Length: 231
Image 1: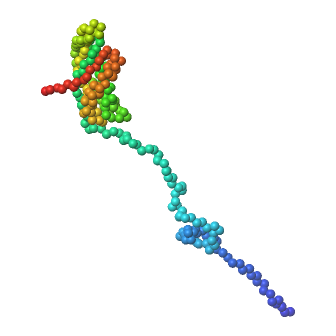
Image 2: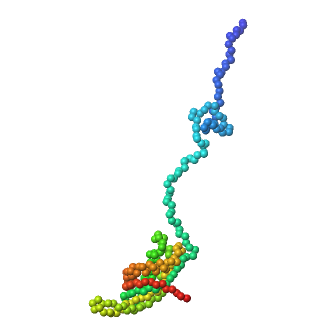
Image 3: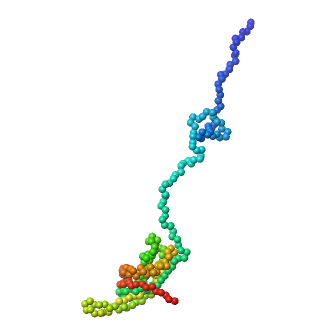
């Protein structure tokens, strides 16, 4: 009637296994051996499989490298873009008298005078001491004004080679008084009247030929003399 104990304990114990904390949300990064950790982050005891190594902190370098140009975009300008101008334009004028031998026995009409004035105005670019690129026609104002003309009848004695005697031939000539006026805000034109006179007297053949082409019926252009007004 006695109960015998078997010596066994009916209580069951669960097996013993180690527990680990869950991995941290952010893994540390390494910059040249220095560990950076944001506040509130837990450092993992296990290193990452492939830690990142960057030579500079994130966000310091630009997203793309700057570009460097080794060739200039354009050649530098040799001359200034705008030529300086005078506050007060340079102005110079002078009056001349010049004799022309004509073959039609009369003085110049209004149309021929206009042609004469235009021709003499065009000569400025031939003697102006400036480069062609400066634009003498645009930056120098030239005006020729015929003031008066006088018809002359002259006698000339010619030797006849056959009869060896003198005979008289009357040739019509015209004395022309005109004014040349120069003005420029870019160049000093104080010497232009004398430059004009020298050029005309050194190119009388050219002047005569151009007058013939313009049908002014001039057989000879003679030297231009400056008129001095005495007061």
